[in-house]
Image (tube, rainbow, N blue to C red):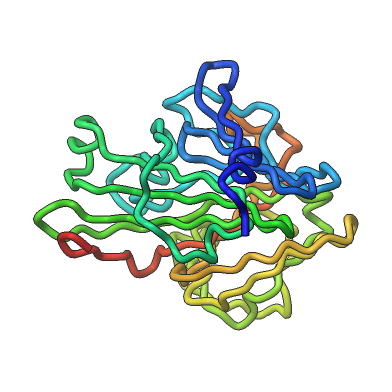
Length: 287
């Protein structure tokens, strides 16, 4: 059980060099996570040995309205270009606020954890491009064992239903893309964004990387593992309520065309996203 004073010492609110609020979570063992109010985005997740687990580009831009290239951007209310909005929706480009009085979550989601609750509501500008009124509540928590958890709660405060797609675009830091494999996606169908979203079935025992990959695996297992052989490190990604998994690495040619991404940085990152893409989530009024 964490007392209120323990929780406070583990949660520090600061500002970045552009004056944008940031929250640093720390657990008693020395692991940490840093969350920006720009996009409600986790920018850093470090182990108790001070190893950074998330990738951020050396060319990342930390000024709205540009999303930060790295960490864990939130794609809402649209994933990718699957709709009329800007790529991956607008939530990752907005300034969120700290939610001082969030509706309660299960005690397991707070006991013994350093956590912060953030809130996004649409502006008048947002309502012009996506005319739906919502409250998006995000909890980011860091457990005593160093595990990072993100819980999103989205409420429709409109008088008509709306649908959205969603992803936690998770940039994992790796030693070398050619030494990495992803397990848990074998035999599942995927949509290949490099082949006009055509549907294929994964044939390999594990997913390895030799060229650009941009896929959404459909209704896959709840647990996916990213194995980094060189670092002898395994990332385990557990999802609840997000049936799909996005996998992206831009490889050499695409990397050179991305302004906020280094030409060689594709070797040290892999995006593996918990997502709801194929079947958008529909919320009735008040849902």
